[in-house]
Length: 144
Image (tube, rainbow, N blue to C red; front, side, top):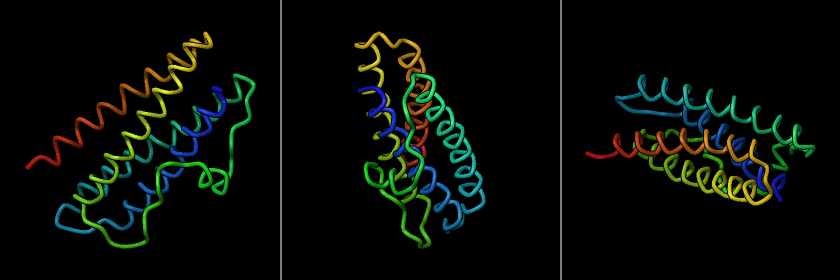
């Protein structure tokens, strides 16, 4: 069901947002300033996506989940630990998380197409494009 798929996506986005913010606060190393700023850019993007997905769930007469408890019960993305962490480890982890979000968006898109909910499908196209570009960029950064 589309609403359940979207709530899973919303849950993963919320946990991912918190993880990015945690990493923003805990990044360490010589590239601190660059990574600190990039992580803020990423979590700002995710914050907008959270709002857009929750509102989309309401638009299609669904009920978005709204508590961290709800999100953590179903999210596939894991929270970050409260510890200092280097950028390489951060980006290796968020690369995996973006792939989870790509899987979520793909599932929503496929189900939306099957149910002829084309506005939902089109919205997922935007997310897929964004996430895939970020995956490509992170992979390029990790190559050494």
